[in-house]
Amino acid sequence: CTQNDVIIIDERIMKPLLHESGIALCPIEAVIAVMEVKTSLVTAHVRKAANNAKKFLSHVRTFALPDQLEPPDWTVFAFDSDLKTNRAALRNPQLGPNWLESNARALIGVCAMGCFSWMRTWNGPDQGYSWKLHLHEDGTYEETKRFLALLSDKVRTESASRYSTFASVHRDL
Image (cartoon, rainbow, N blue to C red; front, side, top):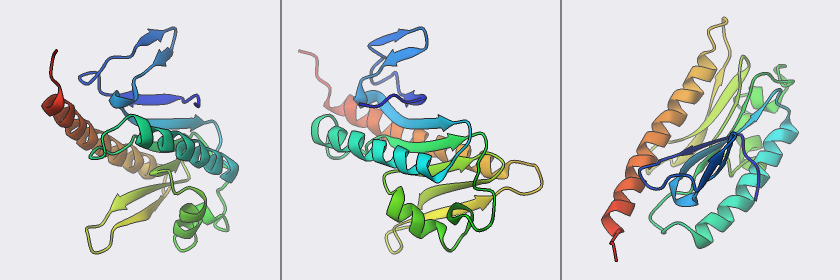
């Protein structure tokens, strides 16, 4: 298992089994999203987070969640980045999607505050999922707002779906 910085759960499904001094032991059925938080982002952090997500999510899909439920969304958020040049693949709209597909397929989002954000979004059955880039402009942090808004929307949607599924199959003995 891995240690994660932010875990978003739906307590309507199940409360943490342990929550003490900032440490929580959460049942996977209630985990909606996971965020690894970094001070400064480099590509190695993105690769490592994707690796953590891939390992973790393979166990979740095998053992814990019914097939009709999506596994937790996994993201990386950083307060800064060393990837501020336009030569960096993660700042390039043409290179970024291929780099993310090759190195970070298990993630649904990457955000470096004040630099860029990428989110994997659904474009309908004809186009499927694709990565969308938003670059930092003019000091408004729109890339960060967009990242958090899309993540919040995905959390709300998945939480409602998961709660509905568990509520419909739950039976007291």
